[in-house]
Length: 300
Image 1 (cartoon, rainbow, N blue to C red):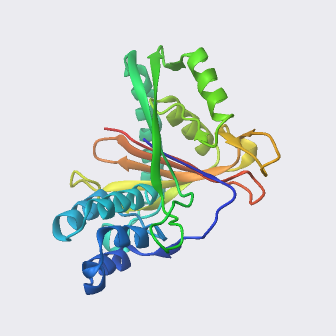
Image 2 (cartoon, rainbow, N blue to C red):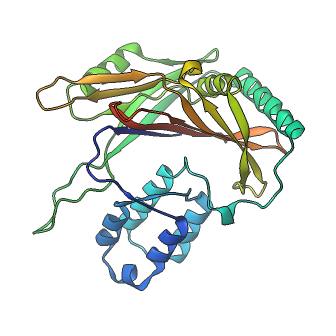
Image 3 (cartoon, rainbow, N blue to C red):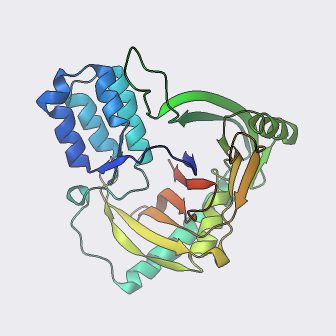
């Protein structure tokens, strides 16, 4: 599961590039002559306009010389690109399904979601949340401060899944929220990955707009169908919960909670009848305290 939450005030806009442009840069003579930290810093200043798939990322790791910092930054770029479509060259060239077949797929998706929740056993788990930010870092010697996405810590929280519902220790959750509200570490609340978010999104999506988007190569060799959905604010039950932020140094810490409209994709294996990935992006306003919010869940 991958989540994205960015505070509204951003220092520098990242430059969008394609996957092919990224490959050309990493394999070019200029990058090969640079130090590992310099290449990683350059990657921290860009964003991908296409999805860097797991297959392509593995190929880059295997065929391109790079240091550990570059590998880490490349992994972050790949994770953040999960909400984008893969390059056209990586999408299978199959015809789009007709309306009747799309309806069959939608029925199969709903059936899978209902069966998934019914057969999911009760269990205990530990949620590990790794946090990153792009606040300026101290630079060596005379260089300007580095602004690049970097890890800032991790939290662990015990959760239980019982009778189709996720349960979190209320005291622990309250303590974590209180700690967030008194520090500069901001946290996006995570919920429902083990099933509830699936039914929430499907319940909203199929009351709104769902249509075939494109084919996906998948990871097992079987082509995946990608259905795109869009949910207006009036029909949304998707909660964005971000704690905490402040407007200036003199203001107190505040929490952002909203149920905005949202859009996303359902990646579906039409042969096996299973959902492989669910991705969601909130349709936030420029005046909101959170600039971007998304969740992507891969089902194994």
